[in-house]
Length: 125
Image (cartoon, rainbow, N blue to C red; front, side, top):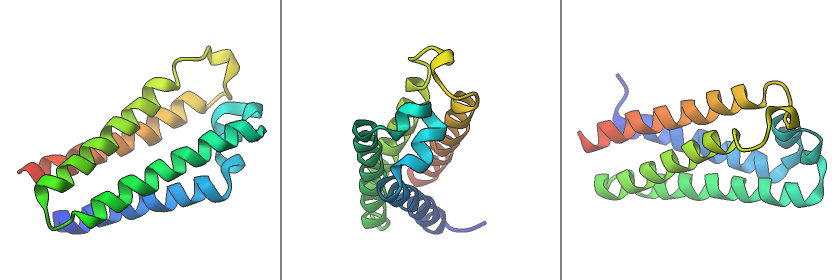
């Protein structure tokens, strides 16, 4: 089994790359995630903000790999962010979202939250 540090590094780097993608091409994900509104400029501002959030959470985790107490705080923050994404997708009526928006958000956000929780459990030992 890979070390907790190795798994956390992979987790943080994948989140970092996702964040970079959200900033670089917000319309690629947002159109599939929230529909036609994802093409609007103001919505892309928010998507880029989510990208920055993921980059910040990644940077914090990577900076704290050798300090379990600090790392736990960053992992907990990532879990809260991911679960908020999952909860938020249920706010608008399903008819206002693309067909797979809810399923995709639950799988991606829920999966990331579960991975973060597993890592947090290992860090807290």
